[in-house]
Length: 156
Image (cartoon, rainbow, N blue to C red; front, side, top):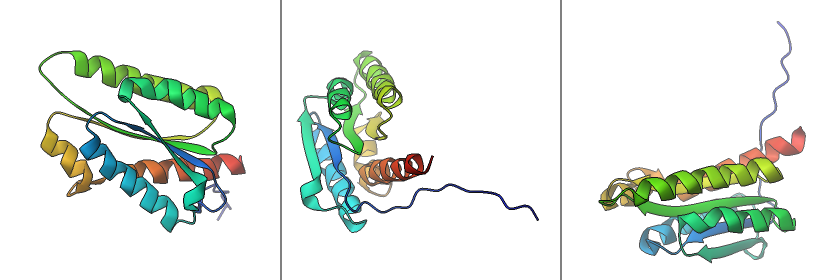
């Protein structure tokens, strides 16, 4: 049997500087996402003093702030959390598309891993489900993705 080299990210956050960028819009949902991300990172070895939370008005502002943080060299990884809930106008689609593309662009441009925890839901109930009830907590998942990606990149 052939030996296959496998590179996997170890879920160890000790000695890492991680920035959480969180939208203020729908903060009653976003606060639960932040809590999940912080809890996950601390349980995996991060020191609270190595975590920074930056609040931005909404999802649309996340990419610019993520770019500034990534370029500063002050964060090993970034976690973006927010909640955009569909309304009666196309505004939802524009915000979600631009925030998603912008965040992905920042990560590709800078090489800094970004965990994507931006909820894009049709209803308030769907957001609540994804912020700590039966759908899990997408803040936890975003923090885990950022951490694992960082650890993979460090091995490449």
